[in-house]
Amino acid sequence: MHRRDFIRISGTAIASASLTSTTFPANSAPQLNIKKSLKYSMVDAPGSVLDHFKMLKEVGFDGVEMDSPSDINVDEVLEAKEQTGLEIPGVINSAHWKMPLSDPDSSVRAECVEASKTSLRDCQRYGGTTMLLVPGVVNDKISYADAYRRSQEEIRKLLPVAEETGVKIAIENVWNNMLISPLEAARYIDEFENPMIGWYFDVGNIVRYGWPEHWIEALGDRIMKLDIKEYSRKKQEEEGIWKGFDVELMEGDCNWPEVNKALDKIGYAGWASAEVKGGGRERLQKISQKMDAIFGLA
Image 1: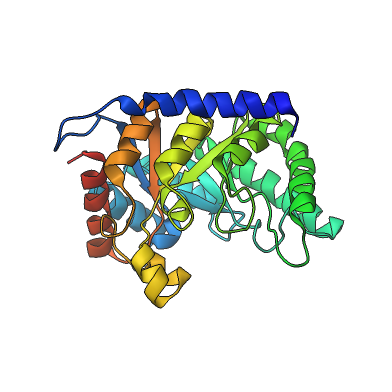
Image 2: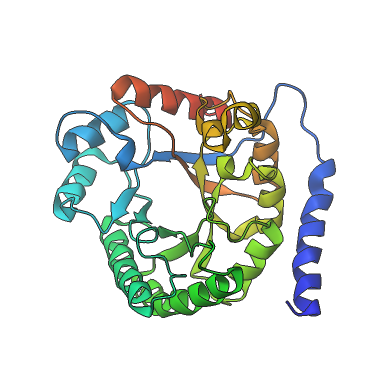
């Protein structure tokens, strides 16, 4: 990183952090303009896509995110959207784990690029605004430096399609051993110098090794959408790191009042999508109610 880049990014983070002196009275929360979504893969109930969309609307969700590419018929989804008014704010790229953009094999990376182009075009048809993309994976066979370089090279191939469709590329880190600092994440986005790429911030994923509110302040308006889940450090220590996710919303270590304050400070308004264990109507209604409580929407 050039020294001037470090100063620019660090200065932004410090300026954001200086706002933390703002306080809110006890038992109050900032009034955030949040719309509730979830992942379609969380729906575990009999019925058609239309039946599922009707149920999601009835239990209080404003939208649902779809996987792409997928076997689901796009026209069927569009008909369900039209009949229910349930929005589709974005899609989740379904290829980025199987064919990561950091893979040493250029043919694997090319497959992911083509799948990602399909995702962007599907999202345009759905009327969505973002494609969630994990940029790459670092492991014992893929170095950090190579993952960083390769993923940026491949994502640049997607930017013309993003501009053509009007669908933005929203980067998310999901324990992929990459972009594990908020300042580095900000730098990664800024190096593209393109407004069609930003960040999809997962609140719960950060708790294992940081504080979500710090990331929110550092990423600022780079954040395009939110994923909502919970994490327990106690379960992590006692039962293993993956067990940390085995806790209900508002019963882990996400400090939601501080998260909301940080979101308010950066002026965030938009979608928050649950990404937790799903189920049928009763389970999904409970998730909807928990999100209401988190954001003061009830």
